[in-house]
Length: 102
Image (cartoon, rainbow, N blue to C red; front, side, top):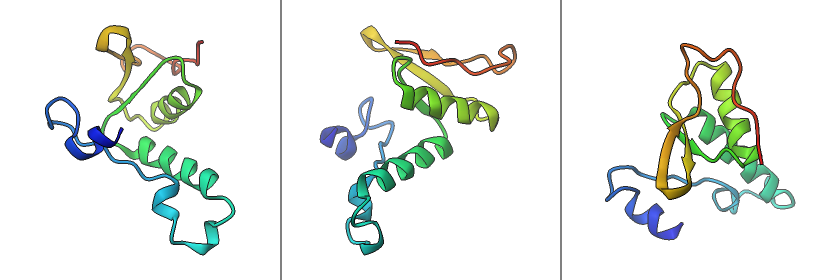
């Protein structure tokens, strides 16, 4: 994670951002709930991103994709074994977002 934050993905063509609890470290208001507040912050960063890449076996990823589905944010992909990316849903055909499946 540290390497991709510094250098990006795919030879630096895609930057990676992380908010989370570290970004709230200096705010005393969140001192006792930094992990929860960081998780909420990361969720909304993911929802508002230009592109989201997650995994179909993560409830977090599928929740982000479902939220983006209902906001008509259609650049969503699942990262699959072997490094393949697959579109999470077809905005022209799918009437409901994909479900979490483990």
